[in-house]
Image (cartoon, rainbow, N blue to C red; front, side, top):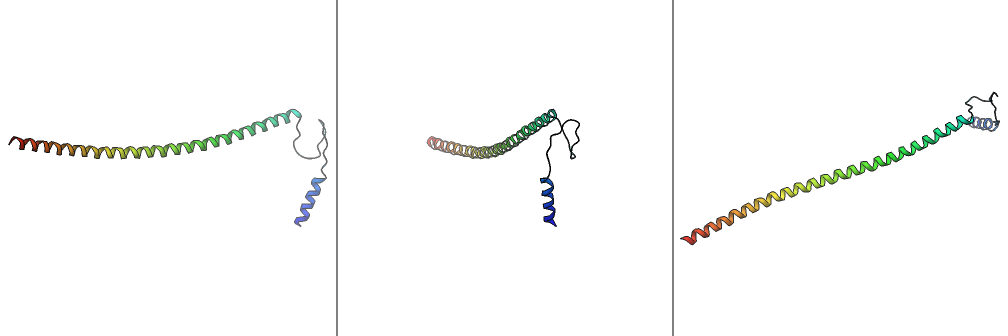
Length: 118
Protein backbone atom coordinates (compact mmCIF):
# COMPACT_ATOMS: atom_id res chain seq x y z
CA UNK A 1 0.00 0.00 0.00
CA UNK A 2 2.79 2.35 0.94
CA UNK A 3 4.70 1.64 -2.25
CA UNK A 4 1.56 2.11 -4.33
CA UNK A 5 1.07 5.58 -2.89
CA UNK A 6 4.70 6.47 -3.62
CA UNK A 7 4.38 5.28 -7.22
CA UNK A 8 1.14 7.19 -7.72
CA UNK A 9 2.69 10.33 -6.28
CA UNK A 10 5.71 10.05 -8.58
CA UNK A 11 3.50 9.44 -11.61
CA UNK A 12 1.27 12.39 -10.75
CA UNK A 13 4.18 14.83 -10.45
CA UNK A 14 5.96 13.50 -13.52
CA UNK A 15 2.97 14.24 -15.77
CA UNK A 16 2.79 17.89 -14.75
CA UNK A 17 3.00 20.08 -17.83
CA UNK A 18 4.60 23.48 -17.77
CA UNK A 19 3.09 26.18 -19.86
CA UNK A 20 3.65 29.91 -20.06
CA UNK A 21 0.61 31.91 -19.08
CA UNK A 22 -0.39 35.32 -20.28
CA UNK A 23 -2.43 37.88 -18.45
CA UNK A 24 -6.07 36.78 -18.37
CA UNK A 25 -5.37 33.06 -18.97
CA UNK A 26 -6.66 30.59 -16.40
CA UNK A 27 -4.05 28.56 -14.56
CA UNK A 28 -4.23 24.75 -14.52
CA UNK A 29 -3.48 24.69 -10.79
CA UNK A 30 -4.12 26.63 -7.57
CA UNK A 31 -1.48 29.04 -6.42
CA UNK A 32 -0.05 32.49 -6.91
CA UNK A 33 0.90 33.89 -10.28
CA UNK A 34 2.95 37.04 -10.30
CA UNK A 35 4.38 39.30 -12.93
CA UNK A 36 8.05 40.14 -13.51
CA UNK A 37 7.96 43.24 -11.30
CA UNK A 38 6.51 41.28 -8.41
CA UNK A 39 9.09 38.51 -8.90
CA UNK A 40 11.84 41.15 -8.87
CA UNK A 41 10.48 42.45 -5.57
CA UNK A 42 10.34 38.88 -4.19
CA UNK A 43 13.96 38.32 -5.20
CA UNK A 44 15.00 41.58 -3.57
CA UNK A 45 13.20 40.62 -0.37
CA UNK A 46 14.89 37.21 -0.51
CA UNK A 47 18.33 38.83 -0.94
CA UNK A 48 17.64 41.18 1.98
CA UNK A 49 16.60 38.19 4.07
CA UNK A 50 19.84 36.40 3.23
CA UNK A 51 21.87 39.50 4.15
CA UNK A 52 20.01 39.82 7.44
CA UNK A 53 20.66 36.16 8.22
CA UNK A 54 24.38 36.66 7.53
CA UNK A 55 24.42 39.75 9.75
CA UNK A 56 22.62 37.78 12.45
CA UNK A 57 25.26 35.05 12.27
CA UNK A 58 28.03 37.66 12.50
CA UNK A 59 26.34 39.27 15.49
CA UNK A 60 26.04 35.88 17.20
CA UNK A 61 29.74 35.25 16.58
CA UNK A 62 30.65 38.70 17.91
CA UNK A 63 28.43 38.14 20.92
CA UNK A 64 30.17 34.85 21.66
CA UNK A 65 33.60 36.52 21.35
CA UNK A 66 32.47 39.34 23.60
CA UNK A 67 31.19 36.87 26.21
CA UNK A 68 34.54 35.06 26.13
CA UNK A 69 36.41 38.34 26.59
CA UNK A 70 34.18 39.38 29.48
CA UNK A 71 34.82 36.03 31.14
CA UNK A 72 38.58 36.44 30.58
CA UNK A 73 38.56 39.95 32.05
CA UNK A 74 36.60 38.72 35.08
CA UNK A 75 39.15 35.95 35.67
CA UNK A 76 42.05 38.42 35.28
CA UNK A 77 40.43 40.88 37.68
CA UNK A 78 39.85 38.13 40.22
CA UNK A 79 43.45 36.94 39.90
CA UNK A 80 44.81 40.48 40.28
CA UNK A 81 42.55 41.07 43.27
CA UNK A 82 43.93 37.91 44.91
CA UNK A 83 47.49 39.08 44.26
CA UNK A 84 46.73 42.49 45.79
CA UNK A 85 45.29 40.77 48.87
CA UNK A 86 48.43 38.63 49.21
CA UNK A 87 50.65 41.69 48.77
CA UNK A 88 48.71 43.56 51.45
CA UNK A 89 49.06 40.58 53.76
CA UNK A 90 52.81 40.44 53.11
CA UNK A 91 53.20 44.17 53.72
CA UNK A 92 51.26 43.80 57.00
CA UNK A 93 53.63 41.12 58.27
CA UNK A 94 56.58 43.07 56.93
CA UNK A 95 55.47 46.12 58.95
CA UNK A 96 55.11 44.01 62.08
CA UNK A 97 58.59 42.58 61.51
CA UNK A 98 60.15 46.01 61.08
CA UNK A 99 58.36 47.30 64.20
CA UNK A 100 59.60 44.33 66.24
CA UNK A 101 63.13 44.79 64.89
CA UNK A 102 62.98 48.48 65.79
CA UNK A 103 61.86 47.69 69.34
CA UNK A 104 64.65 45.15 69.76
CA UNK A 105 67.35 47.49 68.37
CA UNK A 106 66.09 50.36 70.53
CA UNK A 107 66.03 48.11 73.61
CA UNK A 108 69.55 46.85 72.85
CA UNK A 109 70.78 50.41 72.33
CA UNK A 110 69.18 51.48 75.63
CA UNK A 111 70.79 48.55 77.46
CA UNK A 112 74.21 49.35 76.00
CA UNK A 113 73.78 53.03 76.94
CA UNK A 114 72.76 52.16 80.52
CA UNK A 115 75.67 49.76 81.02
CA UNK A 116 78.20 52.17 79.55
CA UNK A 117 77.16 54.89 82.00
CA UNK A 118 77.55 52.71 85.10
